[in-house]
Image (cartoon, rainbow, N blue to C red):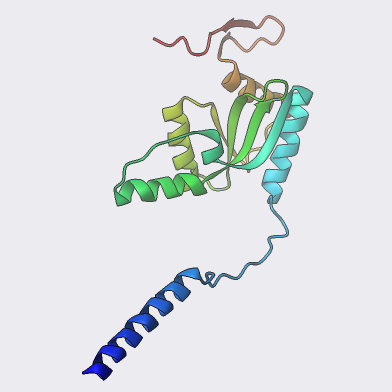
Length: 179
């Protein structure tokens, strides 16, 4: 009977030791380095945005949504999965006002004819958060002037009458005064 009691204690100690050892071990993960962090389209559009917007704006690639918006989700599995998607999603380019650091526009690059699931997720977040969002097709070449106009229209809402460059009339709308 004593042997049975000692054997049971030994088994319990071994199980306790094995569980503790397994929890403290490092995960089996192998890393490889991505030598190219930005693909050619992201580099090209980043340079074009920098040229088009001038020195009053900063352009940052690969910024996560979690750095741009705060969010709360429920405790259920669907909400947690959505939170994981939000944590993992990166915008292609983020345009900030250089002096203040304020967000001016989120730029997503579409490499296909239609937006993918990542672009749709980011568009949904931007619409719900009322963030300026611009989806650019990488196969549609835009001039610096066209890109600047699109970004400025996103960051400073205006109503432009006609396509006249010299006599352009703009009406500036105060952001945040929505009814």
